[in-house]
Amino acid sequence: MTLLYQTDQIAPKNLNEYAFIGELSLDGRIRPCTGVLSMITEARKCGVSSVIVPYGNRQEAESVSGINIYPVSTLSDTVKLLESGVLMDPGEGLIKMRPFRAPHHNVSLNALIGGGSYAQPGEVSLSHNGALFLDELAEFSRSTLDALRQPMEDKRVTISRVNGTNSYPANFMFVAAMN
View 1 (cartoon, rainbow, N blue to C red):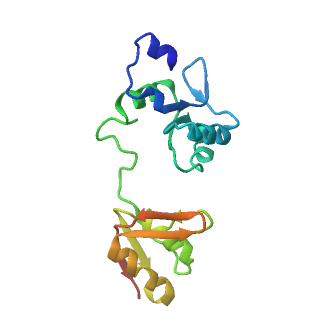
View 2 (tube, rainbow, N blue to C red):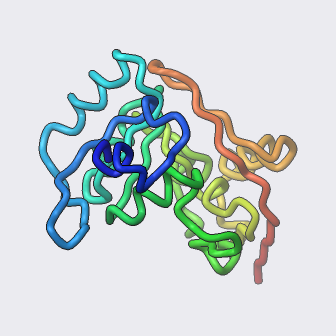
View 3 (spheres, rainbow, N blue to C red):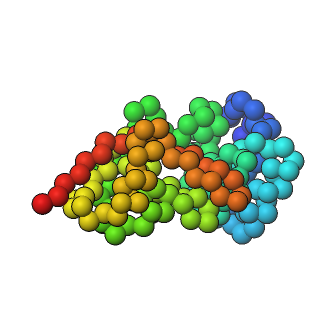
């Protein structure tokens, strides 16, 4: 990246706010590497606000909080991200259809609302801007149905754990059916 910058082939804004991790192959692909977690943690301590990592290391990288993570597959993706701030052209979304989620009636409260050790989003957040369909509504437990009330009112789910609080969007259309 420094070579591209110094030879005026790219002119990104705030290049000094980024850290770059990965191996650049001869064909322009960014290959995964080991030690990503410790590198990102150290970059955060040094005041870096954003890290560009290989797509293959994205899960490990996203486990570090307090820093922006941008997974890329190629050098071209990296340049596009640095120059425009986005990896996609306008109108080029990854999701072409609104989400439709239909959990089974014995779904756990954590799976429906969200939760777990690291506060993962549940079905209500995964159906954000789409539909949440509960078939055989009478089969769902009362506590499960009661837990839906707050997300439907606030259009948001807030999950508190010992290591912090996460808030996920939950603006969904609720559809229920029963025989």
